[in-house]
Length: 106
Picture 1 (tube, rainbow, N blue to C red):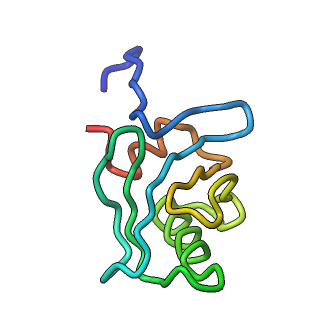
Picture 2 (picture 1 turned 90 degrees about the vertical axis):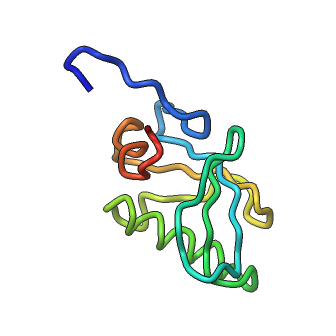
């Protein structure tokens, strides 16, 4: 990207004053944790943990924090605790950097 060029954000990512929001579709009980592909306005993420006793939610938070290189308390599920469709807030990282770290800004 050239200096002065504005990067357009992927459809699943939005920047707000209180952080960066990710719209995700989570697939629990996957063979391994991995970033999937874009499904419309959501990013698919596969998590190995089962959707029992918040194991998948905790696995998702841990996976995203590690992938993005930020503390776990910077990643929060704000909507969809019991759904596969989730809204995640990430604090302390600009939206463009989140897109770059997720590897989906191509």
